[in-house]
Length: 169
Image 1: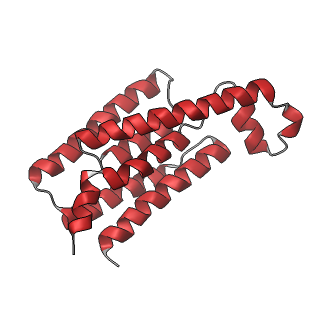
Image 2: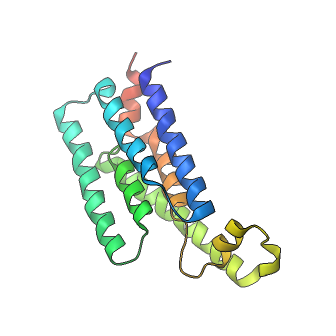
């Protein structure tokens, strides 16, 4: 079992934990974003694509960090979501980022429709678990970490970094 495989597993497990925690508590702990970011820097030497590729990864990550900070400042996204999005973006090059944004946006739309449907049609008495009630009936929040994790997990096998890791022996 290669180190690259282990780090990719950490990436996916981190995304799944982020989605789980966001669904349950509407928060994503900082340690998850740090783990995902550090795992990128650990795997990079093993899937080295050169300085220009590394620079592109860093530029994508910093760009998404700035964008995420801005949309957090406007109150359109939670802080944990913005940090998870930025940490995940370090794994992408520009074409990968386009896939990630597309998959995340589609998943976010489906989740939003589900939540809106639940708010309208599911009686509060049916939602006995606190987290489920908060998920469906909270009028101000949506666990966007679910969409971010979905987008990341679906994008990873199509990404350049994954292609390079697949050729690593």
